[in-house]
Image 1: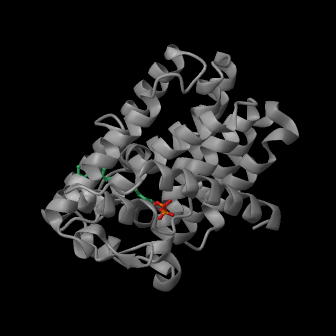
Image 2: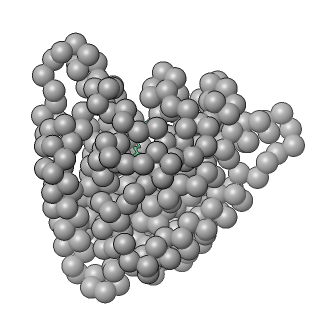
Length: 302
Ligand code: GRG
């Protein structure tokens, strides 16, 4: 991975961490425990790739950083909520996330559910904040698109398909096809990444062509990112990823690694990365960091 990209990712991570810290200042009243749990799930050492995509996508359109940071914070709030709920005993039942105890372990299950809920509403509060963008139409479009990406037609819907696939596997039914797996993963992981990559043209009210280019880029790296996640589950290092691995096979998860084998999954991910990079051809050198982010999705070790 290029040193320039790693430095840029680290710089963007410290910018977004400061914004998230400001947005979740601890109150002194009885709701303090809730905000502590939100901060536990939100401020751990995540890669901040989704925030990076928002900020670099916005930079491509010369959008002011103060606006882009709000959108990046909203996306990281939704992502943190999804991880907190995904780790719950009724979901994946995980005790470790980002190298730390999960929120329901560090606090309790009810508090973890509420922390996820409150992070989800905080995301939309931040996006709808009066006067934060060029005009109310931009705030409306951001809320609409993020709601679509995170709800039944996106992330939560993808999670539902994943749970149904596990049930099917338990019952000994036929595994999902490549097409069905792609649909599941495009929702579960891809939709939020796709929104993050599209944030720049939404903020700038850019042309349909620019919107389509960033949307195609985001959809492709979203899938590549999930394929890498499946490969890391199989061959990654628990200390490096900060979470429990080798769970997919035992849980009967629908993954590309199962369907295509390790080499097939790796080449599919590389194909997607090349297609993602070519979607950015009209932006020339100004999209170099976004192209490097596409490489990062398949080269990452955590
Ligand atoms: C409503 C109870 C309830 C549950 C909803 C929304 C949801 C559960 C689950 C969403 C599925 C999910 C967690 C998808 C994310 C998959 C994924 C690859 C996460 C890891 O992302 P990274 O590697 O993590 O970017 P860091 O820690 O770096 O931010």
